[in-house]
Length: 170
Image (cartoon, rainbow, N blue to C red; front, side, top):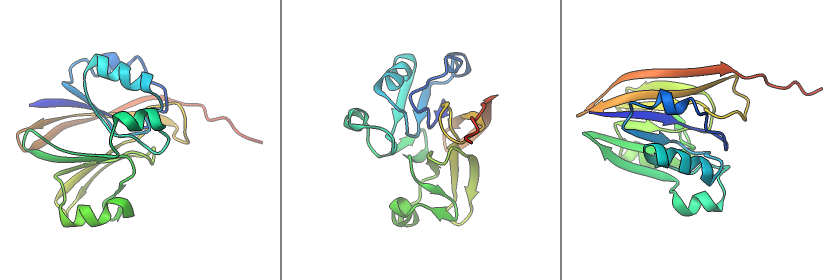
């Protein structure tokens, strides 16, 4: 069994509380918009890390990371990308490939909206962990913990950090 901590959209901010929240995970996966190399290094120095770059990530991160990662974790085929959409509304950049060869677990970020959805048509679980950073329109910063045990995806937990104050522009 492998325990996973899943983040997205940190936008150059890694909350130090994740050192405690992810202390028992084996790996941290980041679904893009990391923001800078320092955040990636903090995560990599803490736990084994898998990550993809997002649309705000510059050339420095793009030299180290891929846009998509497709890999096996235990007995689960995983596809992680930043802009992927969700069941019924997959992004055009992934739609053809996901329909032709769906993974068992499809992870994306980008929307800043936490979503856990099962796609009955493709028999896959979609997870978007929302946004863990301070920048964006989201009001609550979120992340996810879960485990992969053989072919089972289980013990999924949503982590909600404090509400953020969003400045009102007049």
